[in-house]
Length: 272
Image 1 (cartoon, rainbow, N blue to C red):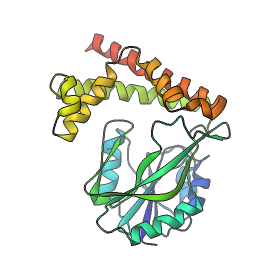
Image 2: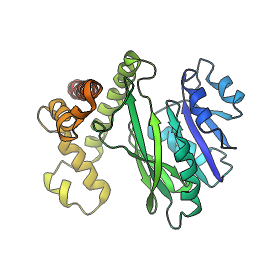
Image 3: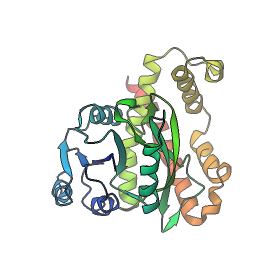
Image 4: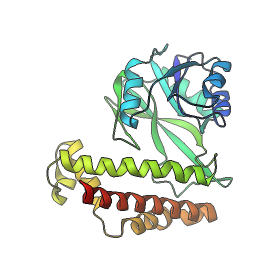
């Protein structure tokens, strides 16, 4: 199969073996490591993967550097995180997608998030991610939770990518999202420095996609009681209540994460 696999890692010795097992069909796996202090590089090498190390700065910069500089063997790349698993159905489907790609330069994949042994089928904001792409046609934006930007048509590929965000426990999830919220707050401050004043009208009418997206994000950032709104969107609007207790817990955690961003932006406004 003419597809390389890219895995981003830092201290992923717990999750990496199962991830690499799920992509064992690939003859070109690159583990792009941020100088792990555990056995992550050794595990990758035992699975026959190539290990390339780079100091992590922010998500978009790190991913963009990888796409421009890593020596991929094949013209297509499938990107997967260590806490994700490719299902056999997806492994089979991506081969067909690439073979019949036509003008498409990337494909959206549906991801299933699991928590407390249950698929969070409803409470996710969006389950679709561009993970199969031509690396020269893909780029990322934002310091954290990066936005995928494809330079060309994008298709869809059947099959599931399974994600286990709580594989290291809730404490690890909270620690990770504490750092994510700091980067989110910095991103908001950076956006406000680099863009023109916010306009509700431009959020819906701006001709340039990037300008319109900036004002749409600013509109959400300025919504009163944003953490409560986020909870209601996930639990009521997305019908997260159908996911049972895991859905309720996830919606609450997401609202807490949103509140952390709100507080950190306020703090940065006072200190800058």
